[in-house]
Length: 178
Image 1 (cartoon, rainbow, N blue to C red):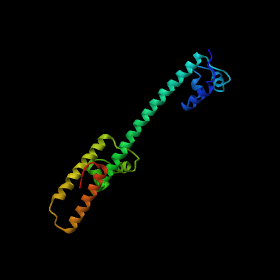
Image 2 (cartoon, rainbow, N blue to C red):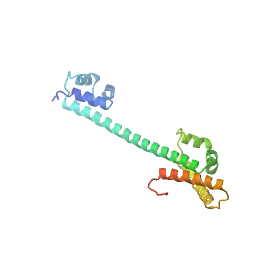
Image 3 (cartoon, helix red, strand yellow):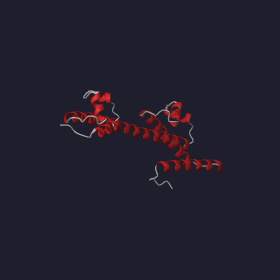
Image 4 (tube, helix red, strand yellow):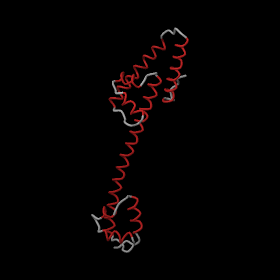
């Protein structure tokens, strides 16, 4: 049983799955594959089944690679958003990179690398930085509740509070800060 006019289909699938003839050689000779693709010869049903099995195997490989890629992309996007939030929060709290580094026990160059997306923080490092930011926010909040003794102190605190509220409302638009 020969199957006519499948050469173009075999070639199209081979191209879309990025298969080379050498990868298909385990089941058929290079010459046979070339003849099928060029429509010089029609494959038997058995040969076509073997070709289909190679295509199905390659499809599974590509699907697996695609899943890994999507997971990496998701992890990268989450990491990017986390570092952006860290940067906005510590700046809104009027902390310097050095102060955040000291409070969290992280090297200031690491924070710089995160902000410039050269590296991504590990989970335990993120926990340390988050804890330092929460403590800094608590201190900042306590400062806001302490008596104001001058107009310049009032204006400074007002601007700091506005900057922090804007940062938080940008990150968490579902919360009402006003």
